[in-house]
Image (cartoon, rainbow, N blue to C red):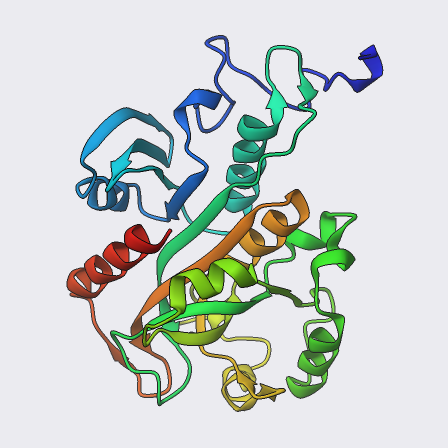
Amino acid sequence: MTTTNRIPDSELIVNEDGSIFHLHLRPEQISDKIIVCGDPGRVDMIASRFDSKECEVSSREFHTITGSYKGKRITALSHGIGGDNIEIVMNELDALANIDLEKRVVKPEHKSLTVVRVGTSGGLQEEDPVGAYVASEYSIGFDGVLHFYADEGKVCDKDFEEALLKGLDWKLTGLKPYVVRNDESLFRQITDGTDIIHGVTISANGFYVPQGRKVRSQPLDPDLNRKIMDFEYQGHKITNFEMEGSALAGIGAILGHRCLTVCTIIAGRKKQDMNTSYKDTLDGLIDLVLDRI
């Protein structure tokens, strides 16, 4: 191994205790089966089902508990809000799995992680009611994160992207959406034999105006949500909005990991209805993912 293979200290930051910079985790503290969520408090909901707990680490918005569930070693980890946080989480999880942090070199054998995001979302189709579950067969990125990666073209569906630009009469010239298919085998593993909606999910880079909400500021394209709801590509309609799944699917695919986002719908954007008491439906989704991951 030559010195040119060594990753510089500035490019991959390791804390004095041997943990990775933001997550504050060491390699032995994560499983290869990982459930991620936005809210740090949701990690406790997931881990409350564990039969035993090995470790618990909190750093900023990143809260991690690793334990055992029905004989499976599982890590529950919160990522906070937005694709920029996912970019940190996925790169640091990959480093924990595939980089020797002491020698600062890539390990000779690649380890693939299974990462399922459990979240909440806004539904875009009238036939998909509040309380339903949606698994993202495809993720559409309005966040721009993947455009910085040289291998973006290897994991994105360019035909879908072109149809989307045309169908939405896209007006945001500085930001081009990207489309990534979530891991197909993991999608089947989670959804087979269930009534989970097979979805196409937009990951927005904000909660208000980027998702078409009009409070005091107005969207550049006030008709965008209607066009999103009407859009269809090869039998696929766009089902829901959230904020992290596209970065998860895209970066995961580039790094060789199996990734999927599964959300419960808590707001119906077409009917303009909302359920703020969604704990029971989220509980059911957590149980389903724990059993199937």
